[in-house]
Length: 411
Image (cartoon, rainbow, N blue to C red):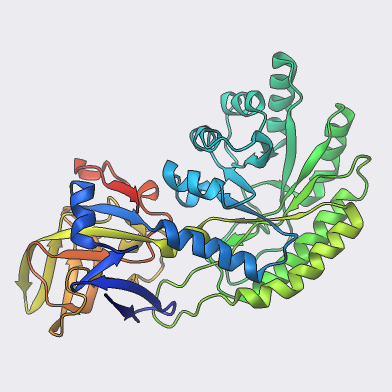
């Protein structure tokens, strides 16, 4: 067994290679395909996820509580694994809530965010005893009504839309007009209504953005978030139980992107933990999804045909954007760039060729690799898309053109 390093992107990743094939935790790609029973499939490395969490904890203050945001990868086996490695789970739908509860984690360690919770979902959450991150005054009224009807005191927190944003983030979730959370100037009135109803406000959820590779931007946003959270908590008669400062930690997907230096974030975060502990006697919560799982996953599809058109080589595969919308460039990219891709059963091959990898769909958008230098491939070979552990299967239009569903497995 030897190592091969893929250098198509800033986050240099090393994978095992067995007999010329990529291997996940020692199991060859062709064997994984047999285990899946088909291509395409996703495979997530159990050990890679565990290493990511332990490595992160080593660089962050021990006082920080780490939550997993299930929306990044809601596969039940992945959620089960992370329920034992993290301090809590964050969900964004009733279905994700059921997945979280099925792990056996204590309900009070689950929080439910989302601007569009309906009355039924709110009732389910109240009945389950999980924490509702309120994103409107109506959600408070619905939660209060559900609690009165069920004879249960709802566990409530407030998601705040701050006046500032997370600079240099791939997606901005706070600052300015947003559908997420409650504008910071309206929060005190809602917090007073919660206390007037005889309930304790559990905490504030302040999530400003995601997919950020700038330590300086994250440090700045965390400082502002803590200042805002403490200012909002100050007038509360019973204080709060925690302050969720969101996440935003990004991973590198494309050439010239550099991995986030988490160690730079850790030192100032320790000071913020001390500040919150001194003011409120409560922990900071860091909510991460993509950062914990993205690099632990691969998407694998099989070459069906090799075609040459006007001198350009096309590898036509059985998988594409219907399973992996993000890799096709249709999940937020302004200018399409290639994810790291390799021919997984030929990683030792010396003969390379510029090839374009496309899926089976009847649209030019179905593109997994545009003119990349890859091992020369043909029918039967296995194409691997790396950085695929987050926002893959669940974030893709699987019903588009009615091709078979993708298989997911935790290796």
